[in-house]
Length: 131
Image (cartoon, rainbow, N blue to C red; front, side, top):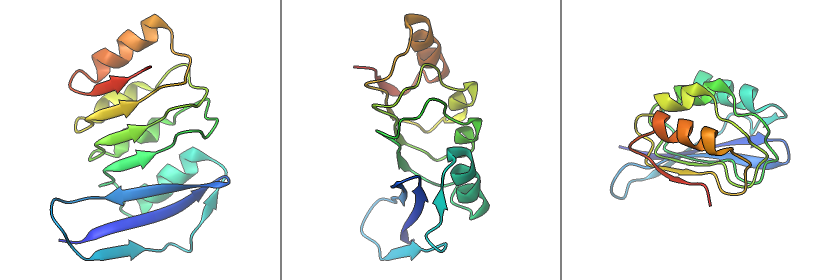
């Protein structure tokens, strides 16, 4: 089993897809010409196109995001998602397709009490940090 990392540039920061199996394994880095994206939807679609659906950790904190694309729901193996300190006010219903998600960081966003409750219902087995 390989430990692999994929770097995809998004705007001026790097979206880092990290695949972590249990144990210590050789690192296999996948370089797709270190592409730069200005659109998160395009970046996620590209990751899926390159068969990186088995992403386990995705950190999109401090990206000034106002919308999270529905394509996020295609990252079925995602276990940790950090969306902290963006400008999000809601999440797409597809977030509920992330059945393996264990931790979701949402600090520093502006979710209404109703949206917080909706997110909790979509992800009942996930530890969600709004504060």
